[in-house]
Length: 120
Image (cartoon, rainbow, N blue to C red):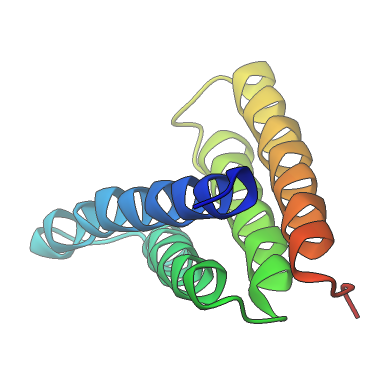
């Protein structure tokens, strides 16, 4: 197994782990009165992370696009938590949102370079 395969495998495992971690929040959110925007954000994050993990694992050309969508959904969820719901601090949420998008773009670029595809 070469370095490229190992890195892609680690990315796929990390994405799957994050997807399962975020999916674990959803049942607890359904017990009370869920905030629809927050519930949608967490479900979207879990679905994107798991789909991206499968895409990276199987070498699909759409995997990088789903990684970017995951970053956007993470950013949107944090910004909703801060600016709409007031649950977290504004600057912290803004920092996490920018970081999520930046990391997603870097990972997507790496996946594209390794798979030889481009984001449409």
